[in-house]
Image (cartoon, rainbow, N blue to C red; front, side, top):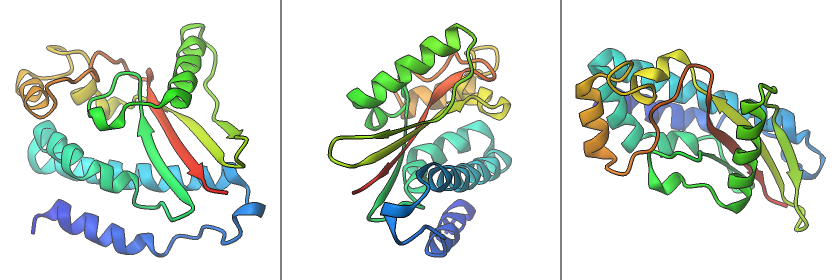
Length: 187
């Protein structure tokens, strides 16, 4: 078993140790969602850093294709679902639904005007709570999501193209809107 698989198994076991409130009706949705997003981001980042150290960006691309969906849902429960999406996806399975698309387009408009992008909590008519938080590109992400032939090496671009022939997730700059986290709380 490779190091990344072992890491994911360890983190999966730790997921049972999360501290989500049992009474979803009386929780602070924003605080819980931020905590879950932070844990998920830290877990995903750590796995990506290890993959990069072990085999460079190509190894990170393999991790993203195989393990990122697992890691993204790692801290979810029957009552809480954690996903990521974007307007320009790499993995077609991560395409936004209509509500997510509307949130992403609003964030994009705000970003183009230079406004700050703040998380949004939405309660729907069916008493569901949806928390959306922007994902801003970090410097370490440029080697796979930056400018081709500038931040993205030719070998990395070739690996991306072979794993994701319909990839739209390049051409970003540091700090630009990459996508959103979506934490959905069941009623």
